[in-house]
Length: 206
Image 1: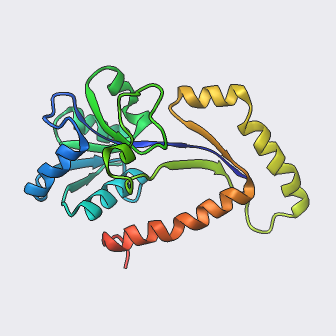
Image 2 (image 1 turned 45 degrees about the horizontal axis):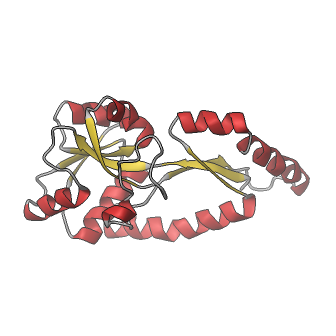
């Protein structure tokens, strides 16, 4: 592990003309109408898909998953009315949020997005367990000599903290959140059993 640069948030969203104004309203509808809602994601096993799985598991509801090959395809399906909601990344949904075509119900980031401050976090919405984000960092192959790591780790930190790089990331809807090599390793190790549990409880793996 060389270090984490930051992460990309996911969010639950519906079309702007949807009757659901909050994530709670959507969950309550799903509880009364098991399987009726269709949700599009950019692939099975993505962080957005896992957010939906854990939302359903913890809330005791059933939402029909409709996986696509990319987040962009999922957004197109949402706008076309082929799915009722989308569990997708912020970069994929940001253009439609700005255009007023999509309504964000809750975002998985630690804090509200500065570009879309009106969207509550999943913690604020009452669903703190749906908080998976896509992280971005650098990982070296096993067996790399320590002398090489001693060069790469500081170089990664310098790059990740470069103001120009940070600003470009923010414009692309990334959240800069640097973690050093040791902290990054602990984070990944802690996430593995959490992800495995969700995958097992949802039937993705045995």
